Figure 1 (tube, rainbow, N blue to C red):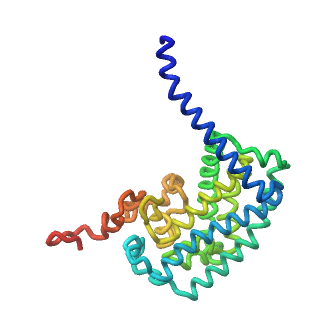
Figure 2: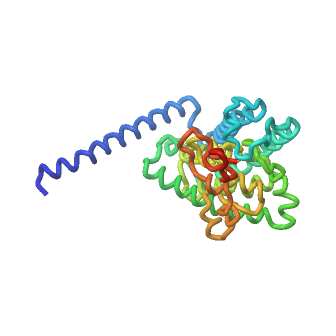
Figure 3: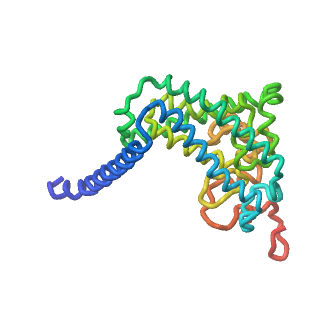
Length: 304
């Protein structure tokens, strides 16, 4: 390869490195500004910062979905319901019961686990908190957290469906055969620890990730679980079909990604259902139930 050819091929790489570096500098600058306001004490950030961040995020997203369910507005969203006719509107007494239980779980089971995670992670300094990790580090750590959660959630979730464990613990969560968003953490406290918090925290511990990566991971996990419990299959968001089917049938689709369900055959009923045809990210505004209606019988040009 001539010198000119090498220079031509190296140009995109140099541009990529330039953009990559500039982006990293931007995030580092924003992180420094945040810490200048919030403080950079590791203990306070990991315990109080994490609890505040995750709680506010949960209720910010969950409240939007709850407003849809309480008001039945905007009306066009009803077309995106996974189970039409359910929670239209949501029952006020049941809703208040969910809110009380979720708040209890957040403030009485969350902090002890955060303390345990903080001390298991080992000593951290203000300097290490200040320095953000590189983008490749962020990517591999997030991927590791996703994989670890899939294993942790799948097997703990299947355990919770076993006999007496289901009756005394997990049955509470399954009171909602058509879930709403904030029921994501509506569960017995033991379930919240075993199946909600530990699988998410395990990846943080295993990777030893920076607190900013942990917060990014918590944000992704919380946003996803709120959506898949929402009862809405909205455009450009992850499909809730598998987990909604789990609430409907109880013994199908225990996982998050679906890989372990496929491996263990715990999605066979789902795979033969109409819901499996709808299980994809919707990239158009036509509701998935209209693209894949319950009945394919056509008469006079209309679907019955």
